[in-house]
Length: 72
Ligand code: SF4
Image (cartoon, rainbow, N blue to C red; front, side, top):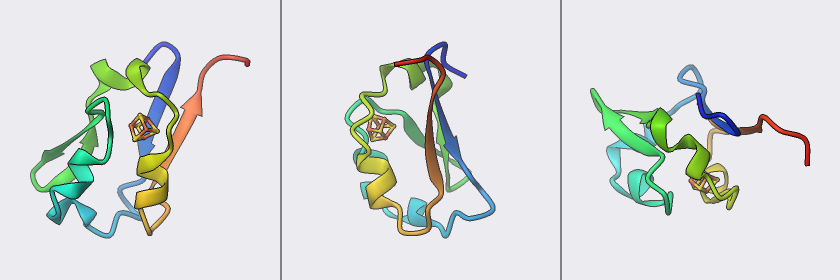
């Protein structure tokens, strides 16, 4: 988990967008990677998240949640 941001993938809801490389590329700061064909979070990159919400908007199954671990 990042110190300021936690990016969560709900694997129970994930419908396998990982089959497309577009999934990996949607994040400008490389928060996601494939592991055994499933998307996972690269935890050491989490604090680089810009809160752009491209990933949240790209995922049709509502799998991704971005948690801000700080106030404001
Ligand atoms: S909100 Fe933007 S920067 Fe953060 S994980 Fe999603 S695509 Fe990457």
